[in-house]
Length: 311
Length: 130
Image 1 (cartoon, rainbow over the protein chains, first blue to last red):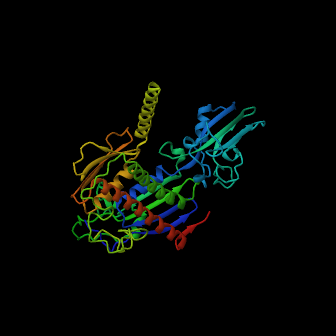
Image 2: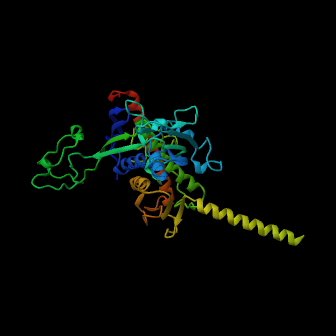
């Protein structure tokens, strides 16, 4: 298994919006591209309401129903890395280091129905934008929480905590992550159902504009692998889309680092085959780079410096 | 005097075993039975990981020319465990292959991260502001 040196890892950004980034990843393996997608979806930490202490709720909605709605409100999560996970915090229950407090105190005194919006949540000031409800509508009101009739009242305190959407989707920074490769289905990874003609009946992927149409007469290339991936990261507004991508990659690296730490703990006994060196792949003839280990862009997948072992 | 010494030693032993048990609970990765004597073939169990890491690490270890086989499995969907099997051609141990794989994966992530930030800073893409 050798690696084609002409194929260098690269990234292309095709479109960037406030809540979306479209980018392409070239010359990585499907497994890694999929890992990035999975981490973006499920393991990027954000802030969401996790505890609700209800003093008064005379609205038509049940306490738990209201709590659930509050949990799903996107909260600004910029600077979330400064906030600790509540379970890791030294405090008893929650504190300013591991939570953000928001308060809702409304009462309807008018004859008409009153709408309560996320922007009515009053945050206990923490000197940051962290924890402000995300408002994307023109009136800057945010999502509707509930409606109150005359004399109905809500008084509650919300504790927002840091979390990941593997635990609950309310912590997801992404509304959706689009992931596609091989829009012409040259690799035949997809088997399209059809009545008469699959090509006519199925909608065409927008990503087809980045690739050449297949040569109908060419034989099937059974050696071809996917090496061009299209991502469409759409966020809910709590984190900028670029940050979601970068945090996802960092999270993936932290997972690797966690295992390396676990290996250092000597729970796994080290035994050398031939007292083999560390990153030499068991070879001794390759160290012509002054013993320098490959680092930075000098990876087997990037620029091929002398440090590469993938010869 | 002798009695009190004995007691303190017993206490120490109890403390030690408790510590070990705690470490055992916290351990991220352990060696599974079924490794060869020279260590060139071994299985590991990683706690709290899934296909996100499993498939990527499997691929990158398999890319190592010294590795004969690498496969992973989630033995049961409701247990957060990941088993990974590595067999090498004999020049490196399975553990070394795992180390190298993890290092390479981390490096690969760094490159993607750098390239992405580079491209974001360079601009030249379509932007839509609200």
